[in-house]
Each structure stands twice: as structure tokens, then as C-alpha cells.
Length: 244
Image 1 (cartoon, one colour):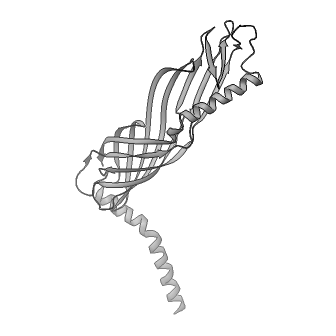
Image 2: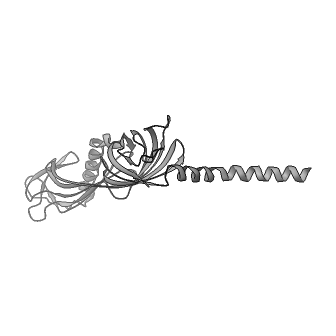
Image 3: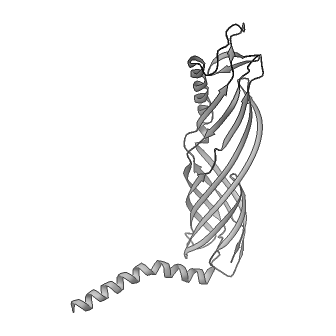
């Protein structure tokens, strides 16, 4: 009797463990194994791949790329800035009514620094650095690079309409999605070189000297405060998908 009970228990456990894989196999055979899509979003142009998990859910993965360049001046520092997203996405799409509407918790990972820039101050021009005013040395003007980083990965939550893997004979889908990704607090880095002078051009220390460098750090904190609203980044997306 004990042997029969033990054998029955083992068979039951193995059956339970095998059920998710079996269920996924059944869903894949019924509704398609994979869907591939392209999209355009606030994270850039991207590609997506989705596979079914249950009757009401999919796993979805994606890659996005976006580049935008702009020149700007702040406190008389000139920046040639570039916004460059390279992101990986992973989402769990849940369809509460087994229709087109879905809720999707996920994760977004940044492969590069989102914002980079070349910084410069023309020779002899006045500028402000961390609240202090200087003149860019005519003989060795201030120049360098900067970047603005966020957390390398952050949680996201979106809502949308359009199942990449329709639970029907339909194969073509136009998914639309809106939501947010939490990036964390911005972290600014300025790598400046050259010399700064007083207004009379009599004293021109290097940017690397402790007194001047402390103003560089203050300028970094100021940039972080000015861009703090970027902690939460909006996601708006529209795409085309095909089920195989």
C-alpha cells in the first residue's frame, strides 16, 4: 500500500511539474509559437519578439535604438549633445479579458549612456561654472566632455491594445502601448580641461585645481537638479506584428 501511495505521489508531482511546459506547448501549437514585430516609440525604432505563456499571457522581448543631436548653451558653456538610446526590453503581457487589452509589467535596460555631449567655451568668453563666474583662458580655453547617466536597468509598466499572438486565426496585429519606465535619479559627469581666468586675465589656473574643480562638481549637481524630472520616462509606442 505504501509503495502504491509513494508511486502515486511521485507521478502526481511529476505531472504538476510537467504541466506548465505541456500547457505552453499546447498554446504554441494552437495559437502560434512566436510573433515578430517592428515598432516606433519614445525609446526609438525597435524590433519585438513574443511567445505565448498561457491563454491570457505572453512573454515579449525587444531592442530599441534612437539618436538625436542638438546644440545648446547653458551658463555660456556650449554643448554639442546627443541623445542616444540603446535599450533592451522584457515584458509580461497579461490580457485580463482574453482580448486585445493588456497590462504589462516589465524591465528596460540601457546599453549606453543616454545623453553625451562635447563641451566648450570659446577663448576669452565669460561663463558660469557652479555659480562662479570665470573667463575661458585665451591661450588654453575650456573644453571637454559630459554625460548624463541613469540606472542601467529600471522597472516599467505599460498598458496597451493589440495581442502580438492573437488567440485566433488572425496573424497581423497593430499594437499600441503607453506607459512609463523608472530610470532613477540622473547622474551628471563633466570632464573638463583647459584654464579659467579672472576677469582681468591675470590669474588663470587649471580647471583641475581643487578650487575650480569644486565648481565643476557644483555644476554637475545643478545639471542633475535641472534634469531630475527624467527619473520617470514616458513610453508611447505603435507597431506592426506578424504571428508565425
